[in-house]
Length: 378
Image 1: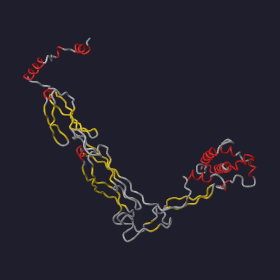
Image 2: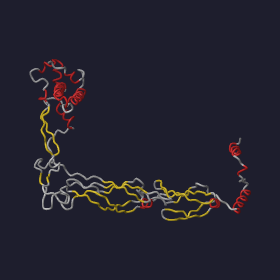
Image 3: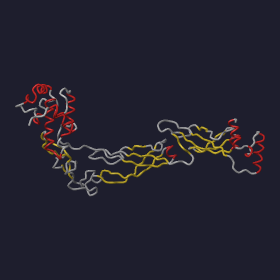
């Protein structure tokens, strides 16, 4: 059976550049790789071999020139394009290209013992009061976590004994498996199924941890909450997470802050907002009142003629800045209350005030349409 044209095999034109040939080869190699075509392995092997042979010729400028001039006859009697026996033999990278695609560019073989591994991080949700968030607090919490067994010091072996090197992987934690493939004999490395990648076997397990080297405990930890934290803040407590593996450091503990709402105060960043009710007399004549702050009650002067919704600022009475010196301010919004029930004396005095002010407070004398006329002049 005659061979197909190498350009046709890779699906490129005769004038294709080196990059185009290389891209075409990688695409076809992925398509026909035997590992991808397990249901028709033999057919895929033949197609894969054909693709590689075409690439071995077209990726080499000297061979390509010979092929362009003489066709397949240029290689009659010398093994064609090299087939699978020609990997690396003067080509621009057939074997390396395949290895990069299917093994991530790792051309080295041989297992090595897993190194120390950091423990997992832990999360703890903490609810604190508005004041605690403002001024900070130190709290003691209890968290369940995994620690090195104290009885065996994390080895998993009973006191007086020790873990032995795994005879199957020789302490590497990995074993190598040889496999014949269409492009040669390959060696795959996988985790040792006897020691589960640890490289050691415990013959006499510790009774406390049953050979695991780890125990589950509830540990009390003091956490310092800095002044100025807000709802959703996250604190990291180093080395208070799960125990590490094979001598690795513990993970970290992350504390997420949730701040309870306050009956009097709300917060915007480092600013505190408080609404204080005053009477219309206080608003009209002015007064000095007491208002609550995070530091206790303070005096606030209400100026004469204050309108409802007016905001007064109390300097340095807000939340301490989380990163830096000083504090925010407190904003006091006054709400003028209108009396709902009046006795006869109060009513008379208000009517006299209205007359003296030239006001008509009788609601029957000004209906809705009169208001429209007053406002729009029509």
